[in-house]
Length: 461
Image 1 (cartoon, one colour):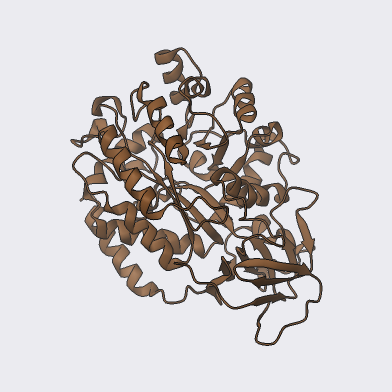
Image 2 (cartoon, helix red, strand yellow):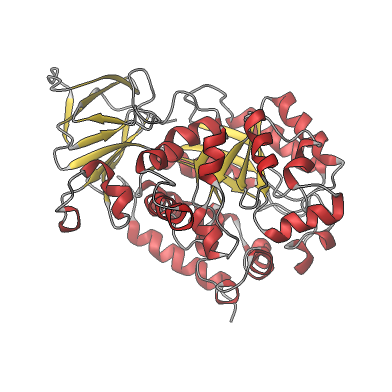
């Protein structure tokens, strides 16, 4: 498991962002002491202790580690597939991920996971929730285990959102184009029970979590199974996650098939509550936003993927203002082409201002969504805010580069400028996992060779 570094002192940063909501978003030029995997103290001019490791952060800004609440790590070998590059969501599903599900051996899944976790870590992510749906009736379940193994090797907090489909193949927009058969409910729940017993830790600063996450409630399983799955998850003490309202077509399907809006539909099937968060939520009516807020149901906001697929712009500022827990996520890179949370945060800051005006979002709010907001929807209450007693998950962004010269306010530089910005150090649970811009022990050249080999195995001639 994750080992902690000895006592650490982060000294002389140019600025520190806390991850908390305004007006407590900024901590100024303060030092941070880490002891036993937790932040012990935050104050100006802390004096080094004997034997304490000191990190000079004078050319850095300190952020809480990003919490990425919705990903598909296997897609890291499916970037810019020509047949899906100009497709909408439904066409993209049928052209890119689903035809290749059966071709993902455990070896390919491991390569994709290593590639994705490295990219996330080097962009400032310290916690990743992966919505993993590489499951079908005759397939292997070991890919879930290897994701935990790889996350541990990188020192990252990891949440496995165990996905999959239970619906008849002809009703599913991805499975309908393949010869694969979905799992049974018993297969899915048995594997989730196994994963829970082996990996799940429900503590507030857990390094490992398991979540029940059928891929899409309106396509991946018959409506009658939705309450059964929700009750099973709650009996096991696990949270719930899935996609919802990603496209207008999705909303139209719900109206035509069930005579309800998507949030109304899931509400009637026991899929709302503070233990639930949905990816996307692009197309919502005001009544749906109110239902989410009233129940404490969260959102994984994926603005780049939503733009890339032409799905639209989620009303994240309105959700946040209403009290919906909002988090940030990069989604799968087959519909993003970037696994960088810095890039996601930069775009999130801009896209709502383009659509709703310059006051729609602040950088402080974006940092809050991407850190504390993510921890909230995952139930990791001791993670992602920089305060004494909290888990020591933080990132030092290097702002000693020409593109950052001229900034009057360096605290906002990573989000305002976006990529490229270098993570000089990243610390998870008190352990240094990125040092001087590199991941200790990672052979990047070998990973590149493995990734190139994987693409050759998945490419369509």
